[in-house]
Length: 468
Image (tube, rainbow, N blue to C red; front, side, top):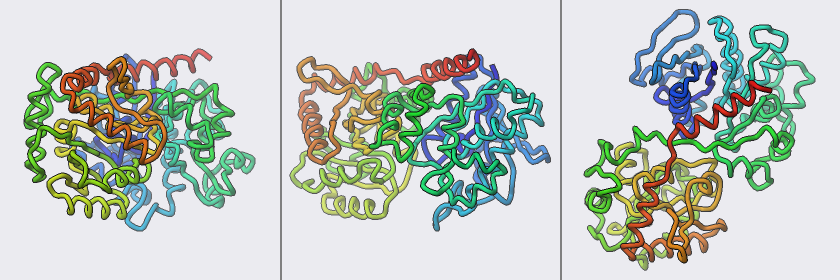
């Protein structure tokens, strides 16, 4: 089976978030299952600094390789892609993003023809690649080269849809009667069109696949997704166990496995407390947050909890950047309680690993969460997540059951400061029951989020499509 992977972000070449992480790892897992994968992405300026050799061809495309020898092709255009940012700059999104990604989508299909590489599946990711299923049917529908090619569109975050002024539709080279599949409150919506034209739609967790068909989480596309409900599948993302492995992690003060987790985590906790000049205490929980400082990630709930920090017998470490308002508020609270709280307003790979290893609890009170990566890392490192019951957090965190003394995390159902507070109170109480907390840590270590499981599910989607 041959699959073309089409994404604007592929780690280590270009990445702003989870999209790049997934599209740099899933192709490798598919290749290990015997699937012949080719990756195609735009040649953004940042790719020159990725640390991998880039081979020039002089034919409008450059090449490189991922792990397992997977070929990567970069669609070149100095006009569209030779810029500092992938999607925008300090002033906002680039005004020609519709043209930029229309060019990428069309040139991707042209490249496959030029390479004479007939693929069974074109697997497209997010709105940046969502025109590919449209072009396959509307532009290449009578082309024998693509006669048997099927398309899969994966939605990583429905909040990002690629919505443009209706006048931009005229630049896509499509028939006027197709505008209806793009129309979104008088504008042109790339993701909507991809949903309607893709042969199968996947998203990054089973729970999120259900949620996006409801008004609460559908971002205006819930009716469109319900109309294709029989084609929508949720497949949980995996975790790169080579990168996220406490037994081999080069960033840790002390590495560990499930057998020696208690001693090593204590040493990593002390190291963090000293680095951030917090009081060195083993008798209170050290809570961590790693991620964007945004409403989606539940920072408003975190701020509510931190309002009475002086009365809390815990410490908090925040790592991330984002909304300036949230950054200021968090820094102000940290300045008031320097022995109990620290904030680092940037992303630091080393520090992220150390927070996952050194903290006792990991906060993820997300407003919505398509899949989530932090909770998987936390479980992998024996750092117990406190999460909102939403999206991929539902599929990965087993709520602590006080009567059965089982579970691997603490979960709250209603998105409110009061409910987050209750879950946190329960987590802190269990932390002080050392035997019970050790048991929960062992349950956390037992969770399996390997990419092979996810790749197997995608392979089933591919084979189902090809058997239709």
